[in-house]
Image 1 (cartoon, rainbow, N blue to C red):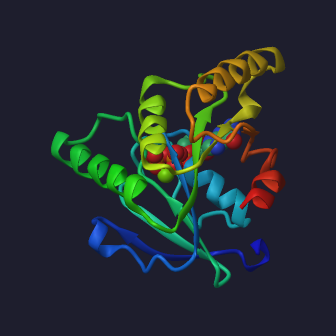
Image 2 (cartoon, rainbow, N blue to C red):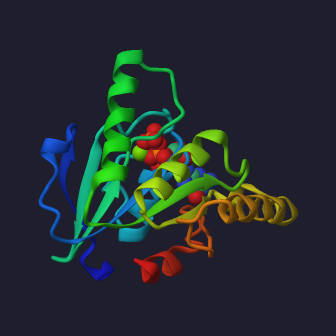
Length: 191
Ligand code: GTP
Ligand code: MG
Protein backbone atom coordinates (compact mmCIF):
# COMPACT_ATOMS: atom_id res chain seq x y z
CA UNK A 1 0.00 0.00 0.00
CA UNK A 2 2.69 2.50 0.98
CA UNK A 3 5.01 1.55 -1.86
CA UNK A 4 2.98 3.86 -4.12
CA UNK A 5 4.11 6.88 -2.09
CA UNK A 6 0.82 8.74 -2.04
CA UNK A 7 -0.39 11.73 -4.03
CA UNK A 8 -1.99 15.03 -3.08
CA UNK A 9 -5.61 15.08 -4.24
CA UNK A 10 -7.14 18.33 -2.99
CA UNK A 11 -7.54 20.82 -0.19
CA UNK A 12 -11.08 21.19 1.04
CA UNK A 13 -12.54 24.27 2.74
CA UNK A 14 -16.20 23.20 3.03
CA UNK A 15 -18.04 19.93 3.48
CA UNK A 16 -19.49 20.39 -0.01
CA UNK A 17 -15.97 20.08 -1.44
CA UNK A 18 -15.27 16.63 -0.03
CA UNK A 19 -14.29 13.91 -2.49
CA UNK A 20 -16.67 10.94 -2.77
CA UNK A 21 -16.69 8.82 0.39
CA UNK A 22 -15.69 5.71 -1.52
CA UNK A 23 -12.37 4.66 0.02
CA UNK A 24 -10.87 3.62 3.30
CA UNK A 25 -10.18 6.90 5.03
CA UNK A 26 -8.03 7.73 8.05
CA UNK A 27 -7.32 11.21 9.35
CA UNK A 28 -4.68 12.90 11.46
CA UNK A 29 -6.00 15.27 14.09
CA UNK A 30 -4.13 17.15 16.77
CA UNK A 31 -3.07 20.50 18.14
CA UNK A 32 -1.24 22.92 15.90
CA UNK A 33 2.40 22.01 15.44
CA UNK A 34 2.06 18.51 16.95
CA UNK A 35 3.48 16.99 13.74
CA UNK A 36 0.48 15.85 11.64
CA UNK A 37 1.86 16.89 8.26
CA UNK A 38 5.34 15.61 9.10
CA UNK A 39 3.89 12.24 10.07
CA UNK A 40 2.08 11.93 6.73
CA UNK A 41 5.36 12.64 4.98
CA UNK A 42 7.13 9.98 7.08
CA UNK A 43 4.40 7.42 6.38
CA UNK A 44 4.48 7.98 2.66
CA UNK A 45 8.24 8.35 2.54
CA UNK A 46 7.86 11.66 0.74
CA UNK A 47 9.64 14.68 2.16
CA UNK A 48 7.20 17.39 1.19
CA UNK A 49 3.93 15.72 0.29
CA UNK A 50 2.13 17.46 3.14
CA UNK A 51 3.35 20.95 3.98
CA UNK A 52 5.03 20.97 7.37
CA UNK A 53 6.24 24.08 9.09
CA UNK A 54 7.57 25.62 12.26
CA UNK A 55 4.72 28.10 12.10
CA UNK A 56 1.72 26.71 14.00
CA UNK A 57 -1.47 26.84 12.00
CA UNK A 58 0.22 25.98 8.73
CA UNK A 59 -2.43 23.53 7.55
CA UNK A 60 -5.66 25.50 7.18
CA UNK A 61 -7.60 23.25 4.85
CA UNK A 62 -8.55 19.60 5.03
CA UNK A 63 -5.98 18.04 2.73
CA UNK A 64 -6.72 14.74 1.04
CA UNK A 65 -3.93 12.43 -0.10
CA UNK A 66 -4.58 9.25 -2.04
CA UNK A 67 -2.76 6.04 -1.29
CA UNK A 68 -2.95 3.55 -4.13
CA UNK A 69 -6.56 3.42 -5.38
CA UNK A 70 -7.98 2.34 -2.07
CA UNK A 71 -7.15 4.81 0.71
CA UNK A 72 -7.31 8.45 1.66
CA UNK A 73 -4.95 9.94 4.21
CA UNK A 74 -6.42 13.16 5.53
CA UNK A 75 -4.32 15.97 7.01
CA UNK A 76 -6.42 18.19 9.24
CA UNK A 77 -5.92 21.77 10.35
CA UNK A 78 -4.55 21.97 13.88
CA UNK A 79 -6.73 22.99 16.77
CA UNK A 80 -5.96 24.97 19.90
CA UNK A 81 -4.12 27.72 18.11
CA UNK A 82 -5.41 31.27 18.24
CA UNK A 83 -2.78 33.40 16.52
CA UNK A 84 -4.86 33.95 13.40
CA UNK A 85 -7.92 36.08 12.65
CA UNK A 86 -10.73 34.94 14.96
CA UNK A 87 -13.18 34.52 12.10
CA UNK A 88 -10.73 32.33 10.18
CA UNK A 89 -10.06 30.12 13.20
CA UNK A 90 -13.77 29.71 13.89
CA UNK A 91 -14.36 28.76 10.26
CA UNK A 92 -11.78 26.02 10.07
CA UNK A 93 -12.60 24.66 13.53
CA UNK A 94 -16.24 24.33 12.47
CA UNK A 95 -15.15 22.52 9.31
CA UNK A 96 -12.90 20.22 11.34
CA UNK A 97 -15.76 19.30 13.66
CA UNK A 98 -18.21 18.79 10.80
CA UNK A 99 -15.70 16.49 9.11
CA UNK A 100 -14.92 14.43 12.23
CA UNK A 101 -18.57 14.01 13.12
CA UNK A 102 -20.02 13.49 9.65
CA UNK A 103 -17.71 11.67 7.28
CA UNK A 104 -19.22 8.26 6.56
CA UNK A 105 -16.03 6.66 5.21
CA UNK A 106 -13.81 7.76 8.10
CA UNK A 107 -12.56 4.47 9.49
CA UNK A 108 -10.23 5.74 12.15
CA UNK A 109 -8.98 9.07 13.46
CA UNK A 110 -5.45 9.28 14.73
CA UNK A 111 -5.28 11.81 17.52
CA UNK A 112 -1.72 13.06 17.73
CA UNK A 113 -0.34 14.04 21.10
CA UNK A 114 3.06 15.60 21.76
CA UNK A 115 5.14 13.09 23.74
CA UNK A 116 6.56 15.98 25.76
CA UNK A 117 3.22 17.33 26.92
CA UNK A 118 0.59 14.59 26.94
CA UNK A 119 -3.09 15.19 26.29
CA UNK A 120 -4.52 18.69 26.80
CA UNK A 121 -8.11 19.84 27.31
CA UNK A 122 -8.54 20.55 23.59
CA UNK A 123 -7.49 16.96 22.81
CA UNK A 124 -10.13 15.68 25.20
CA UNK A 125 -12.71 17.89 23.51
CA UNK A 126 -11.92 16.26 20.17
CA UNK A 127 -11.96 12.80 21.78
CA UNK A 128 -15.43 13.51 23.20
CA UNK A 129 -16.63 14.63 19.78
CA UNK A 130 -15.31 11.37 18.31
CA UNK A 131 -17.04 9.37 21.08
CA UNK A 132 -20.32 11.12 20.32
CA UNK A 133 -19.85 10.49 16.59
CA UNK A 134 -18.89 6.82 17.07
CA UNK A 135 -15.59 7.29 15.24
CA UNK A 136 -12.91 4.97 16.57
CA UNK A 137 -9.75 6.85 17.34
CA UNK A 138 -6.21 5.92 18.23
CA UNK A 139 -3.70 8.07 20.08
CA UNK A 140 -0.31 8.61 18.47
CA UNK A 141 2.46 10.19 20.51
CA UNK A 142 4.68 12.38 18.34
CA UNK A 143 8.20 13.78 18.66
CA UNK A 144 9.25 10.92 20.94
CA UNK A 145 12.86 11.74 20.04
CA UNK A 146 12.51 14.93 22.08
CA UNK A 147 11.86 13.28 25.47
CA UNK A 148 13.86 11.13 27.82
CA UNK A 149 12.61 7.62 28.44
CA UNK A 150 11.43 8.23 32.05
CA UNK A 151 9.50 11.30 30.98
CA UNK A 152 7.97 9.41 28.07
CA UNK A 153 6.69 6.69 30.42
CA UNK A 154 4.92 9.29 32.56
CA UNK A 155 3.23 10.80 29.51
CA UNK A 156 2.25 7.32 28.32
CA UNK A 157 0.59 6.57 31.67
CA UNK A 158 -1.26 9.86 31.61
CA UNK A 159 -2.38 9.30 28.03
CA UNK A 160 -3.64 5.79 28.82
CA UNK A 161 -5.64 7.16 31.75
CA UNK A 162 -7.23 9.74 29.45
CA UNK A 163 -8.03 7.14 26.79
CA UNK A 164 -9.69 4.92 29.37
CA UNK A 165 -12.35 7.61 29.79
CA UNK A 166 -13.26 7.57 26.10
CA UNK A 167 -15.38 4.74 24.72
CA UNK A 168 -14.31 5.37 21.11
CA UNK A 169 -10.61 5.15 21.96
CA UNK A 170 -8.63 2.23 20.66
CA UNK A 171 -6.68 0.97 23.69
CA UNK A 172 -3.25 0.65 22.08
CA UNK A 173 -1.35 3.83 21.49
CA UNK A 174 1.52 4.26 19.09
CA UNK A 175 4.74 6.06 19.96
CA UNK A 176 6.35 7.77 16.99
CA UNK A 177 9.17 9.99 15.88
CA UNK A 178 8.91 11.16 12.30
CA UNK A 179 12.48 12.36 12.66
CA UNK A 180 13.86 8.95 13.67
CA UNK A 181 11.30 6.77 11.91
CA UNK A 182 10.11 5.25 15.19
CA UNK A 183 6.63 3.73 15.10
CA UNK A 184 6.19 4.38 11.38
CA UNK A 185 6.06 0.69 10.34
CA UNK A 186 3.52 0.04 13.12
CA UNK A 187 1.32 2.90 12.02
CA UNK A 188 1.55 1.78 8.40
CA UNK A 189 0.42 -1.70 9.31
CA UNK A 190 -2.52 -0.31 11.31
CA UNK A 191 -3.63 1.70 8.27
P1 GTP B 1 -0.30 22.50 11.76
O1 GTP B 1 -0.44 22.20 10.31
O2 GTP B 1 0.13 23.89 12.05
O3 GTP B 1 -1.48 22.10 12.58
O4 GTP B 1 0.97 21.64 12.33
P2 GTP B 1 1.29 20.10 12.13
O5 GTP B 1 0.67 19.32 13.23
O6 GTP B 1 1.01 19.66 10.74
O7 GTP B 1 2.87 20.07 12.43
P3 GTP B 1 4.05 19.93 11.37
O8 GTP B 1 4.05 18.59 10.77
O9 GTP B 1 4.03 21.11 10.48
O10 GTP B 1 5.33 19.97 12.34
C1 GTP B 1 5.59 21.06 13.20
C2 GTP B 1 7.06 21.09 13.57
O11 GTP B 1 7.42 19.95 14.35
C3 GTP B 1 7.99 21.07 12.36
O12 GTP B 1 9.05 21.97 12.59
C4 GTP B 1 8.48 19.63 12.32
O13 GTP B 1 9.75 19.50 11.74
C5 GTP B 1 8.52 19.26 13.79
N1 GTP B 1 8.35 17.80 14.00
C6 GTP B 1 7.32 17.04 13.56
N2 GTP B 1 7.49 15.74 13.90
C7 GTP B 1 8.64 15.67 14.58
C8 GTP B 1 9.37 14.58 15.21
O14 GTP B 1 8.97 13.41 15.22
N3 GTP B 1 10.52 14.92 15.85
C9 GTP B 1 11.00 16.19 15.88
N4 GTP B 1 12.13 16.41 16.56
N5 GTP B 1 10.36 17.22 15.30
C10 GTP B 1 9.20 16.98 14.65
MG1 MG C 1 0.03 20.57 9.23
